[in-house]
Image (tube, rainbow, N blue to C red; front, top):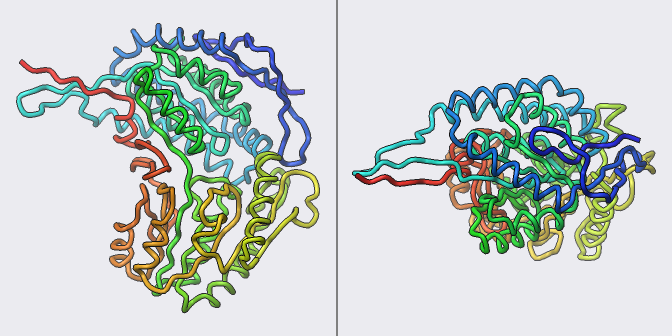
Length: 471
């Protein structure tokens, strides 16, 4: 059985001090395919020490030196795209298209950082003072299982560009992808201790990280519940915190939208990444007058979202990441039925012919109101709730009536009108008539969707401290 590396400290892969072994189950067929020996407290402390020692030199490197590191990392990731795709499909259940796109984005993220730091004013004059932007220090990075390589890239690239050293804690549910990324960092020839990894139980590793005074920065992507716990713990040692958390994004289709274009976009926004995306547009807000037309189009378009084994065909959707996810989605579909929502498409159980593995039916509920649990909770699966509104003002009110504020979507035949609606939405990013991603624009959320921003100058500054010099 494949043994996956869990510890990279001070420039080399090492046998973990931890002894707990976890079996990894492929969501494709529900069968074990690998093992991971968890890192523990000792491993974590050693990683922090290595990063602290390396910081003394790495924080003083030049923009040119950091740019060279970033370029080499990009090149090494490109060499491993096929390996990363295989791991993403086998370990996570991503479709081939998604696996390729997400891992190419991971590579280009490091190139993007080069252009950012070459143009960023690390030293500037403010009134009579000189302001110098300095690396915040040792950064502990927590990344999720639903976008492993991409999340690692976004955080590590910004930290390295700023001059910080890193202790990476990837999700123990996606260790193969994380190990390949570490192999790329190793091959890029980074100085020992600049990037370190410990992969194991979150509660075990986070305790050491959060209590350490050597770690001065936390960047976490994951659930709102865990993010709040880490934020509270960070105050004790005054760690700087960036949190990219959950979402329950509204997708507003205005009454002048071209439904033949808006509905396919809406389903893609909801079902992307097998529905396991914090940015998923899982609340579809439609005009009451267009309800029947929307429902007919949804059913017709939903049939195009084929589900199957991503390693054997070009399906639109693969399985969910694990058994826990599968059971969670089944429970929410059942909740929707019990709440009285109209099951428009999909439903309980596995799709036909897919008894093995963690496959679910892409599901659409109509007749949903914004007080239902399926409209308020982040389900994190391919479950879309259709909510009607009477006018534009009510649509905005429903969209903003959420604990989250990560992403929103607006479809309209009038871009200026859509922009006015977008400006009223409490969301960190609003997409108008598109599903495009801008890797240089800030990404993050309002309310329970997080604190701080990633990407571009904004993401870089999350790893910098401002020092004022007055003469």
